Length: 253
Image (cartoon, rainbow, N blue to C red; front, side, top):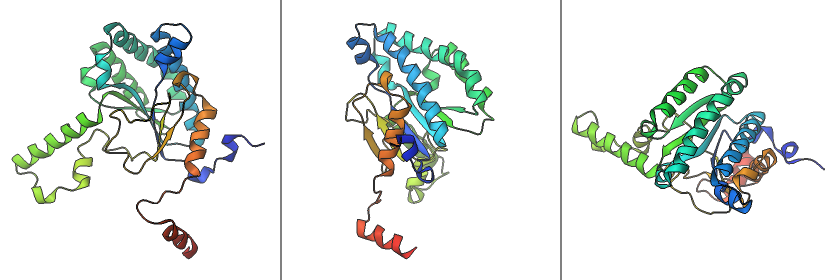
């Protein structure tokens, strides 16, 4: 019997996969451990998914690492998450470089502690010339806030007479988002059994295929990632047209 990876059509691998990594706390609670242990085990899943995405030739992998809403969590948990981010970079920077992974960020990274900002900037610089997977960490990120920031920039350009209201298009706003240089995701995965988007890439996922799994993030591994990609490949992406129209277009080729 073929594995999920062997069943994947290499010619139809999504260019960009985004993931809401949910379930660290519940995983820890189920095992009678502190939430910080759940987050630590979640890092192991990050490594597995980065490896799996690279194997398949995925070009962009965006991970919802720390949301704007996460600042409302207990101070001790926020500090643990910041320390974990620094630890991840310290331990994985050589592996990222050796595997040609380029690190990028979206979100308000200026709101992060200074030592975290310095470590992130170091990692961005160290991996800037890499040509493999683009690993995008969404840090202090909220999609609604990103859209508001883009809107304010457009208003500013109109005020300064650098832009006319009649010239505003979808592309105008897109260019003002923190994701401006990143293609829209074709596949979004959410672990942990929840069925919501949690203020993540709301503008960008208009036509993204959504995949939800009950698997808690620390248990999510390479095979789970391959299964999600295979599910994506078995879907019909219509972009507003009818199935019959797609069939006719394929027949005409």
